[in-house]
Length: 353
Image (cartoon, rainbow, N blue to C red; front, side, top):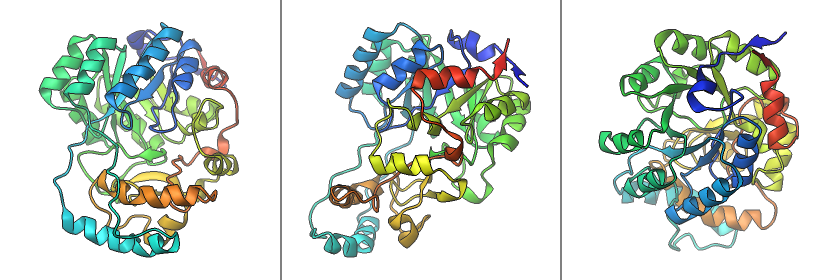
C-alpha cells in the first residue's frame, strides 16, 4: 500500500520527489548530487571535508550539469581548544599499532580536515546560492546564519531529540531533519552528548512532528520503500537517505566498505567515537573492538582523526579496514545496488499524490 504524499517539502524546496540524498562527507560525489537532483530529488553536497577551493570546484561541476535544486551541507561545531595532554594519551593508546605497521609513534601526524562553517564557506553560499543549506551539530552563529538566510536559501538542520527540534525551530529553520539512532555517520546531536538516551527514527519522527510546526524530514533506518511509507505515516514530509546511496556506483567508497554494505546486517554496526572524537555509526572493525567502540580517551572532535591517518593509509595499502571508518546505518541489509537516479525514483514510488 502506498502512502499519501505530503507536499510541504517538495513545495518548499522546489523539487519533484520528497527524497533527499544525505550529505556523506568523503563518499558523496558531484555525480551523486547531479543524478539525484536530475531524478527529481534533492542532491546534497557535504562540505565538512572539502576546502573552499574544492567546494567551489564541486559546485562548478554540479551547476554545469543541472539547474535543479541542490543542498549544500556544513558542520556547525566549534573548533576545540588545544589539549596536548589528551593528544599524548591518545597517541600512547595507538602506539602499538604504529609499531605493528612499521611506523614511528613519535612522528608528527596530520591534522583532521573536518572544518566548521565559517565566513569563507559562507562566501561560497553567497556566490553559488544553493537552494537549500543544511547544518549538522546545531547551527552557526547568528551573524553567519543571517547571511545564509539573506541568499534566500532554505535552511534545515538535524535534530536527534525533541528538545533539539524545538531549539532549531526557535531559531528559524525551514524544516527539521529527525535523525534517528539507526542512522549512519555522525550523530547530529548538539544539546546532549548522552548516547544512552538517543531515540530511534520511528519513535522520534512522530514526536518531533507533534512538537514543531515546520515540516519534518525522517532520517535513519530508511533504505527501501517500506521505510519511506512508514516515515510518511508517522508525519514526515520527506525522507533523507544515506546508506542506500553508498551502494550506488556514484559513491566514493573503498572496496572493503562496499563489501561490508553488500553483506549488511543491523547487528554489524555500532556507534563509535574512535575515528573522530564524536559518536558516529559504522561497521565494526578492529580499532572499534579493541579501543571502544566508545572510548573515554578519544580526544575532542575532530582531533582524534589526525593520529589515525598514518595507520589508515598503511593498512589500506594491504586492503585492511582495521583503521578505516566505514559509516553505515542499521538498514544496510535492506539496500540494493542501483544507480542514484534509479534509487531516488524507486524510493519516491512508495508515495502517491
